[in-house]
Amino acid sequence: MTDPSHSRLEPDAVTGALPVRAEDAFDVEAMAAWLRDNATPGATDADLSAVPHVEQFNGGASNLTYLLRYPGADLILRRPPKGSHHGSAHDMGREYLVQNQVGQSLPHVPRTVALCEDSSVIGTPFYVMERIDGLIVRKNLPAGVALTREQTEVLCRNAVDLLIELHRVDLDATKLTSLDKGDGYVRRQVEGWSKRYRTARTWNVGRFEKVMRWLAANQPADHAHSLVHNDFRFDNLVLDRNDPTRPIGLLDWELATVGDPLMDLANSLGYWLQADDAKYMQLFRRQPTNLPGMMTRAQVVAYYCQQTGTDITHRQWIWYEVFGLFRIAVIAQQVYQRYLTKQTTNKQFRFFGIAVLLLEWRCRRLIASATHLPTDRANDQIGSIR
Image 1 (cartoon, rainbow, N blue to C red):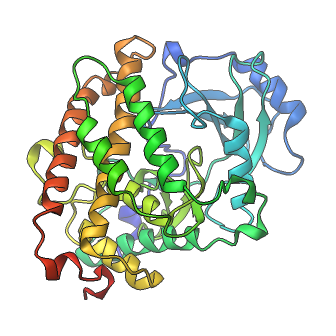
Image 2: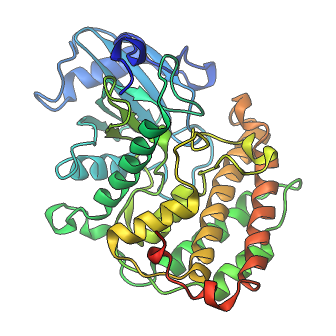
């Protein structure tokens, strides 16, 4: 293991926390007064009699995340951005409920502190949770953290194991069974994300019509129904400062629901750019999945299938892979539309249109490959790979 004296960041260093952008500012004193009166008793060690210093995390492309620096403890505030919102992605009440309930079964979930559904306080609903003190991995490992190939292998396996653990959460032990809309999850996802893309499409990106038609025509039946995160990435994990191979937190529950776990895996792997991917795709890498020791996408799928007893062929998996990439393209396009219409000035979004074009190209390449797989490989079970 890496010497902790070299890998540990000081507790006061909060990676990624920056001054609040002007367009995302809110009335801090009003928020502090509301939280003082409404926080769940005993939910935090923060001194809520104070007015916190507020910073903003620059990562993420959906809900806004802020650091509240109180005496005694730091807290996290989540709220929707201004402008048009899509589906349940910005429903603070829903996100709060999911996080609160899953946290009773999965120890990696931050403890919730309070939910405010009154938009008059800061202009939007919001909720507050504890901040898990640890390391956040973004495009690269945090400064001061160096992992050997063997340690990276452990980190990768632990991350996939956490996704598997999430998929095994007993829904009956939570209040989330109402999120299960029954059979047809795959169909609803294809229809919903296709509609979102057509709504958000701008003149300078592809139509995606061939991809959407192929997804609709070849969609599988629901594989299973379990809790799914729908945004499982390394930058939504919090790693132990003393052992960066060990995830201790799982963040961003806004898209979590009950659905098909294979689609959750596909959504996660849509962000998984590996070392041998083309250079122009590497420009959009958001996590260090290119490091020596990281599994390839194919190895992740094989490991997942082996650990869960999942039977799926190579040809069948291509459908899930295309869907995962398409869904990310829709999210990128929604954010890009917000940038073009000046609903956000965050400059990291100005190249998202290029990402959408590249994702369509990748989807169409995969669709073409599905018809050219040798029969023996096409019908081979992925989980049988060693």
